[in-house]
Amino acid sequence: MDIQRFMECKGQFLTVEYTSTSTKPRAEFKGVVLTKRVRMVCRAGIDFANLATVREGIATGERGEVQPLAWGEWFAFPYVISHKGGYYFRLYPVAGSRPTVIYTVDGEEVSREAWMDYLTPSDRAKMESADRPDCITVKAENCEFPLAG
Image (tube, rainbow, N blue to C red):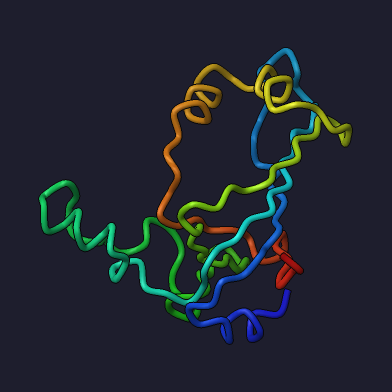
């Protein structure tokens, strides 16, 4: 992934695709590889603290002030975070757009429900109750852009 090219996308709407294989299965499925391939419209190169939802949340007391990064450090603010020798893109999902997700178990495509059956109860609960985040961080090497809409 070309970090310099990503940093040229200040505030632009992008269609990105990324792969995530970080989910660990329940103990009885040890060794099974769970993967998600996500295609979504997002924005890049904006400051989290300047998001309307964040400013409004602070003003109304629904959230505290924006804190420093919980992990890593800014390689190129507000685009790229570096952590343990890797680079991560900061992406902002576009409100109203719905990502397309392909779930696989050991490389075979399955439904979301079948994929979730492999998760630990705590990971499953997180997935079922997860609100749409204001921003996400994706490992640069797992991300492709720009893609045709």
